[in-house]
Length: 187
Image (cartoon, rainbow, N blue to C red; front, side):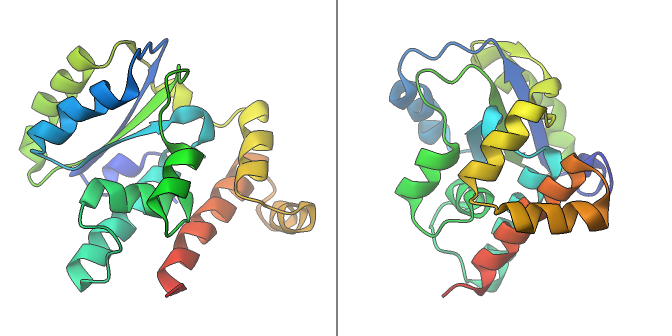
């Protein structure tokens, strides 16, 4: 797996923000729903297992729409469903969505044309009330423990993957991506 998934598909952008202060989540999200120019999804970065986690969620959402197997009518919501490994929007939002107390935000943009990248990065950076900081996407020891609980990864499952992978971060990311892949098989 490549360390920076943006290199794999220039139309998928993943960016992080720290020190975010959102007073009203619904109002914040509504400004993006109204525009609806491109699929954009916001995640609590503390629950994200790195760039690959969101990249594979985006790829699966795009594939679902192409194959007409999508659960949601909205590409951004489909990406949220895949990222959470859930089929129900309410559960997906509860797991990974932003809330009023979210201070670290991961943003996933799915562009039609890669030449729009700078434009949308600039727009997102201006609108999000925080500092652009991709470090919030990195896995830390605290995030690893929280993500293991969130995705209900058993000790045996994690230790088995850890023996094969050798590194905690890669093992966890792979297990989360496996959860994403399982969503495709659920009907």
